[in-house]
Length: 117
Length: 115
Image 1 (cartoon, each protein chain N blue to C red):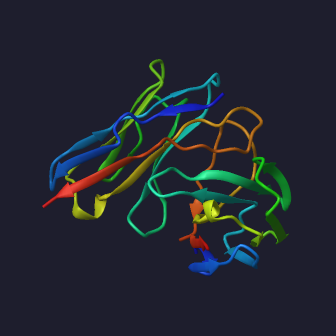
Image 2: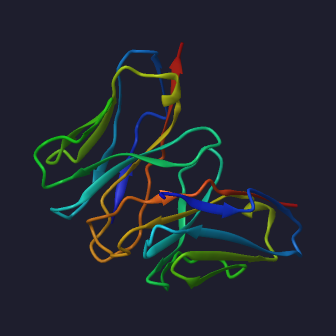
């Protein structure tokens, strides 16, 4: 099973709402990632969890709050978002969760398309 | 710092023809991995091919192959016998820096396949 699942597929929220995005993988991978992708742009890394520890926070505003309850699950909690936060949010995982130049293949989920009104 | 350049925002190819997508990067590492990913419209991003820098041989995966020029820091993707299903955004991912978990991607090349 090489699947990364994400729910929901689509989300519309107001600027005062609180919502969560969920990502799940059952490949035994030890690293999980959140990316933000605007239309016609490459994915931009937001957070990396390696062995359930937050390893990278790319200076993302605090209205985005990641959580890794266990090695298979990754959540992204959203609160008081702005319209410019509207984007495709991608989750990915990779096997070893190690750092350095020997990068690993990332397995991506289908994404959650978020619209903030 | 990791940098990557995909100089072709958009390319077109006739079905069954061959096309090459370019990617150049910068790194201070000597041993590293490079990746090409494909993102079809409204579908998941998937790995196309991976190259390990210490290997002399260029990686191939069926109709996909790379032309890896380590000294020139060039990593182009060749798609042979193009098919309609190859239409997608293609992102090059350069080497990660030592000690980092961070991946970055090039700006992407949109490939159109003409019937």
